[in-house]
Amino acid sequence: LFLCMSLRLLSSLLLLALVIIVIEGTVANRVTDTHKNFIRNKSSSTMSTNGSKKRVSIQAPADAPTRSKAPPRRSMGPRQQSLPAFTPDNYSSDEDDKFFHDHEKNAAALTTTTKKKGDDDNEETTSPGSGWTNGQVPPQFTPTMTLHPYTRSGRLMLYSHHRRWINFQSSWSRIGKGTTELDAVHKESSSGQSIMTGCLIDEAKTVRALVAQLCECFYKHGWATGTGGGVSIRVGGPSENRPYRIFVAPSGVQKEDMVGDDVFELDMERNVVAPPKTPMLRQSACTPLWYVVYKRVPSAMCVIHTHSMYAQLATLLDPTEKSDVIRITHLEMLKGVGNHSYDSVLEVPIIDNRPTEDLLAEQLDAAILKYPKCNAVLVRRHGIYAWGDSWEQAKAQCESFDYLFETAVKMKGMGLDSGVVPVSGTYRDEDVEMDDGGSNSPPAKRQKTEEGPAFNGSSATNNDADLECSDKTDVPIVPRDSKVLLLDIEGTTTSISFVKDVLF
Image 1 (cartoon, rainbow, N blue to C red):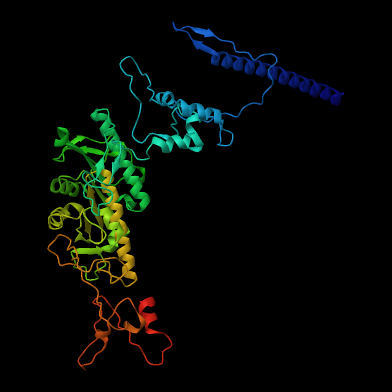
Image 2: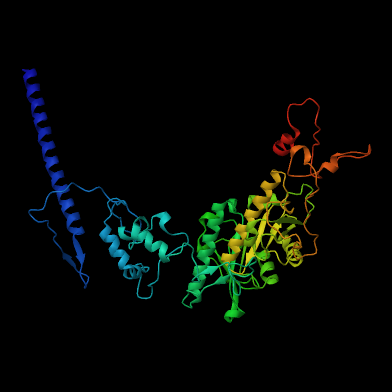
């Protein structure tokens, strides 16, 4: 009897527990459905003009095909929109042609949108460093615009009249006024008309962005690694009936990641006219030296400082490190540095480095005075300062100098001196006197051209007289920078000409 009563009680308890579970599940489902309906109704409602909510019902047609649920879109931040996936293969050429022929209308659509914050605040919401890198893709960049460089008509438009460099003038040429493309020497560059609207704010924004673009370019060349180097650009002046303004790169900023908001705007007394928007920045350590160039060379409108490897190595071609100049002649790229032609003797002054950049000011000023034809100064074991009458000329001349320094360094490895006039291999009139470089320094030395057989089969240098040793007191002349004198030993199987010409 006791066992029967216990089983009946247990059965009742189990039945009661099952009923409770069923009731709780029903209530939970009803609450969930009610919450979902509330969220759905809330998301489908919009605000009317008087502030009251208006219910909008959106229903799909009865015959509309069913679609699978789309994956959720990633958020791209405020004021952003997700772009549909696209590739050059599935892009419509009709859309591309439409954009190509209606480029003016599309360009107008690319104007920056503003975000209204109130009646008294309708300005563009930007901050230093904002942009595509942190996901802020402008809504105007539809697939038509984004694919612009990938399509034929898009590339045609891009390379027809869209320059890759940010600029504030319509054109530029290394050939200046009063000269032709056939002149051996070019001194001044030529620029086109201004493309600015006359607004100084627009000009400043353009120059700031250009400084950042140049720094990124020099970083890619390997000239501005480790935040080294920098660029400054000068605008205005008496010719434009307004004071000069100088835009200088900041110090200690990653050159490949610079933006226009990092750049300082100064006057000719180094007073800050407009500080950078990015906080906690300092002017470049090169700033005092840029001002030395601007004040000593009135035509200079851009000064570039790089830590080029070949510019540094060029200062070490003299192992004594006592020379104050490097000479280079008979190279085609001499035309690119200004004031020189192929057969000119280029003399680039070298000044000794100092613990801090500002201490170089007096040495730089003296070097410019001593070598007025040269548009650059080398700093030993450091780098180069180069300038020009426009940013394009300064860039072109800096690239030409680096090319010449690389040539000089590699010629040294071949046993050749870049400052020596070649014996043969270049056309010359015998009666033409060599250009002395326009300075008080002695002209470049000529190579010996004595008649007779070359040294042990070598045609590069004739030094038979040096090795005759007719007198017992004679000692063979060895180049001053040589560390080893190699003597031929009878019975060796290696030709001394191979040792001299190839190994050393």
